[in-house]
Length: 459
Ligand code: UDX
Image (tube, rainbow, N blue to C red; front, side, top):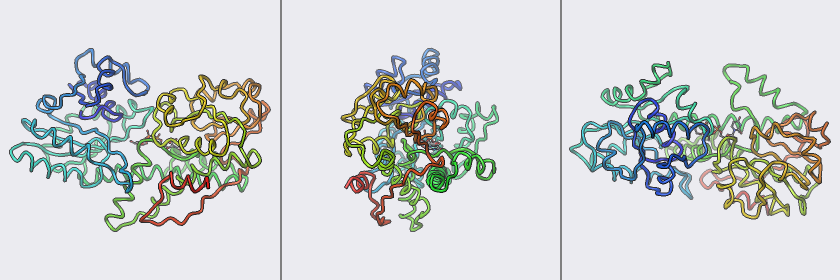
């Protein structure tokens, strides 16, 4: 397993739990040090126990030495990062290709090289071309095996997947991959074999579709506010239709994380490059960027037009609960905008502080939700951590200076919040929040980045 990031580490740990012998290779020495001492460098429920168990059983080792790991391997998974390239929104494949160059000299015996990282259509073919050039003598196949795990439920997702998707172009590779995933087939997990191009595109299409569901329900929730409907009732009603499904219909401050923003951007790029603009997906991205920008304005309008001089308690900073991941979290847009508009921000997040501290300069970090809320004029929930649901609203109201509770994740029940004395505002639940629209003509070829839109909205 090349790369001990989220996907690489979780996959390595789970494969070793299936009984395979796995070497996880990474260049980051501080990360390796932690891993070797049995400490996962990421917060992921259940990962630490599983990792330790397999390390003790000697099925899982960590190394910075790619050579012997590759020479011994039947399958090499590439799980290095494919971040969004600055400027053009395309997936940056430099880590993938440098891993290929490094591993090429060590290939020995028949080896299947498979991408686990999300890579654009055509990458497997290109990897194969490069490897054949580097090692015309070597016996190998290149596959695509995109990973669909979600942060926060990664172990469950890996071990009980809706499907395992494998793109292959020959029977030998297929047999090896069937064997690797045999422990899951035994549990009746569908293992779907398709072409390499289909596997590569399916991963992007899946994430774009899920992002579309979120932007869809976010827009519907805005309409609910204007017409007096309740988005949770609407989502429940439409979700009962199996063609629609009830998942991914929770409105919020916009999607974030390490995958959706990057993958939506990359598929848009692929569409443009192939002269097939994906206008629907482009709009999904625009709706999401504008949403994050509009949230600060909503908060201002709720409190009468300005947050200047006000103290705002922010509950939750990570892009979603059960993770310490801050990548593309809506809080990274919303908090600086509130600061810019003159508010003092106190933040509590159960796991995100270490990663968020340098990204959110000037905020006051707190150890508990109540500490963040004490003396605050306004409290807003940005991430739906479970512990917020159990908050005693009467106590919470008491410690606050003000009485405004703006719940961007619909964590609380309106009635209970009102009973505790709060002026409560959920999302899409019948109260008009006065939407702020960022109107800007978007050139398809020159789409502003979130930061540019942010400046525009602040101006
Ligand atoms: C996602 C995909 O689900 C996963 O299959 C892929 O492998 C990686 O990207 P992840 O980024 O871990 O996983 O989180 P996910 O649970 O999908 O949530 C993504 C974002 O959407 C979060 O910001 C979340 O808050 C938001 N979201 C999700 C909503 O706003 N509403 C919803 O109904 C669901």
